[in-house]
Length: 170
Image 1: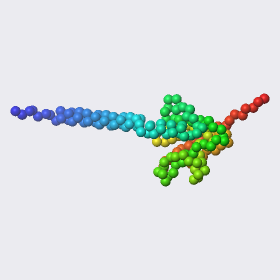
Image 2: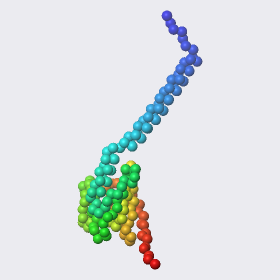
Image 3: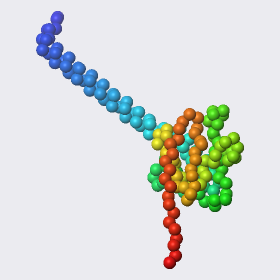
Image 4: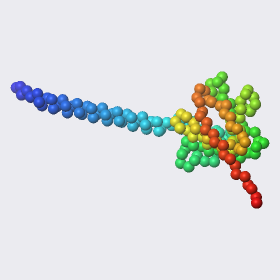
């Protein structure tokens, strides 16, 4: 027994419906893969752990600087305040290309390294993906120098100098 042959009009409709189903499936798959990539970027756990450890190490190692807050609900912004007088020397961070960018504490004048936090009243560091935004408030008349870059990455520094109000008594 032979099945009756379909007419060409029905074959065309079946092919169009199959093409529409395949294209909708392809668009849905591309949308899901994009959504999964966005979720993966938000859940970049090793980088988040490195950021948290780095902030805690800075809080522990910078003598005289205190971590005041993570700026409310933003865990990627750390704010430090200088609790020292001007006469106390600030700990230096040293990064050398010979050690593969390893960061360690060193003396301020040895090997041409400058103090990382010298003349700074407060420091805010915000992590934005793989970049860092560092905002500082300087002590009056101080200059800010940054001689620190881990490995081959650049750190962009935005500095605004705040003018102190003079207390004038009548």
